[in-house]
Length: 231
Image (cartoon, rainbow, N blue to C red; front, side, top):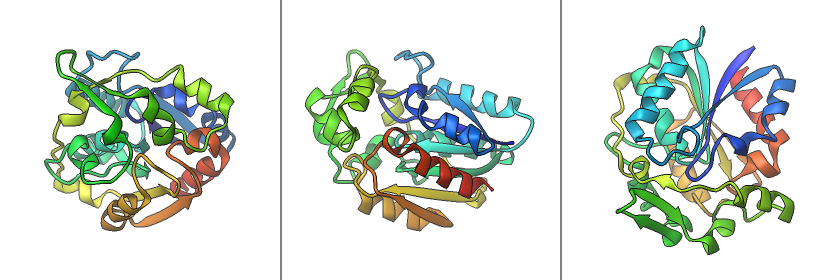
């Protein structure tokens, strides 16, 4: 079976893939969930998260595909630069693809999405939050009430370092096959900015008529695209 590591975005956790993972399994893909925050720990630094992800990948007996959502694209890119021989491909799901020495925050500020307007940085606590009034329009603008309530109860603070850490990309990173899934109703990372990143970095691009969280409201369509890009 193809093995796929699923990396969530900021303020989220492995829980966000709960609708998508059983469909991937049904399609013959083995999903492996990675928690950027290690059980919601805001003490987990960017470097520690990258080290744990590298170790997870090294422990798998074959090259893997990484599916990275949103901020997770930065982590995927960083790890792929460190263990390129273990990466079969990267699928960016409405995710940031950094340039060399770029951070997640610097990329977000290039865009005109909703998130920076609701971003609350607590430097004394070393965390970043999203103002509660911005959560639905940013991440869940097309979710029904039941799914929205499920998600809002699980949103957590995010370590600030994950936003400000700069990524150093190796030459090998640029030869790894990359794919992009655009979310055309996304308010967090705008479709226009997604298109810029995808056009510059990816060999194949697909689109979903979805907001920022297709793993919740379009899990089968998302899983089908992942299957397409991994087979």
